Image: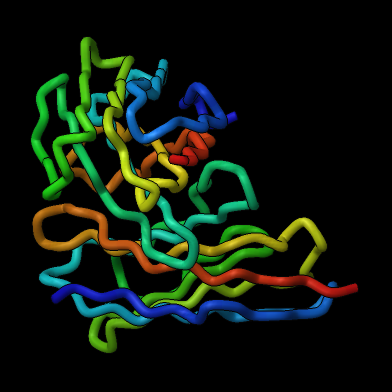
Length: 109
Length: 114
């Protein structure tokens, strides 16, 4: 079966750095997405990786290793507004999106 | 605001009721999706429409009935639901169904079945 694993919950301190990991086992691979979802709101797109390496976008970076079936989302200079759930999703060989259950990130002052 | 609008935001319905969820996008996208989001579970893809034709139906019970009258609108008709159907129902759209472009989500309808 196809599977995406990410931690259920993480806690970090304002101003610090946090890394949210995602591992996947899918039938083929056509890219990996990270989304942010604040409570009661729509998931919003953060990043897309299809080649190995690091993609940096301001305070957020996303890394991919296809050989290891592994990605992480790195958040720097954490702000209180970064408290949200972070969803990892992989497109399989049929371009269907397989979703993780999300990581709830709690930021403390 | 993501460009995808869902109504209503909240819905409480009895098990014998019939209701409809509405989704609208004016992003010029060709693909639209219905997802079910339950607490601490992955998003479950329910239906996919591409150019107004249904291309995916992931073994969804017949008490959920989608309708896509045009490329900008998507409905989910509900009837004789069960309490376990209570969840957040998310609509999304993307440029195409089989591409690497990201999906844009609506804010969802929080459905409670009593």
